[in-house]
Length: 265
Image (cartoon, rainbow, N blue to C red; front, top):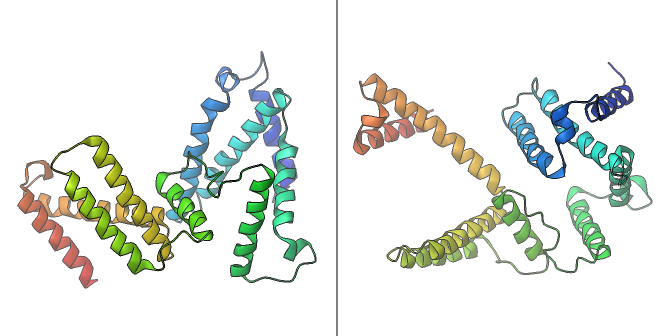
């Protein structure tokens, strides 16, 4: 097995060579903070996708792509005299030690629940040190909307702004559905956007109350729909029909067949 320090040094040298004026890659030299950021998000999703598919053969490659993004930022920062890769590594190491005094300090051992609570207290103190006084400060705007909704509601819940249980959230869900129905006749896009957004936000709260990740729930629903719709296409093709020319009734009948078949397995 190769030495990790050696491989990291090699990667840092490769990045420096790619950005070297005159001898580097023109494309890499042209990139900046704004142009690289979307690639970082894309690479993070590709890592998550490989994990979701349990594709551990592909995972080192995807993690390497994500690590390369960090190295890219470190190189650009070093060129501008801001910071370097060592600063990134030192900062995260210091943070992990600071947030785990039960491992690296004299604090008593904690179970996972106590550690989660202590972690949140520590993060709140760090936000206060950065003069972020609002409970909801520092939640990244670029997060997927469902994930951000989950984080927002968790923060609000920590200061007591929360429903008592899932049943109470379901009551709120009924209220939001009624408000959406009331807006349907006018078809005002701005009002519908507001009401549909409220509905999805409440669903994110419901997932939290049930100890579920709303993003994971939606990914599961997406995968289920894709699987079932593919089966519908197969059924219709076997009957001599293409999906595009089948009636809604034919497609719905095939859909119900697929669901019944899944229920039997």
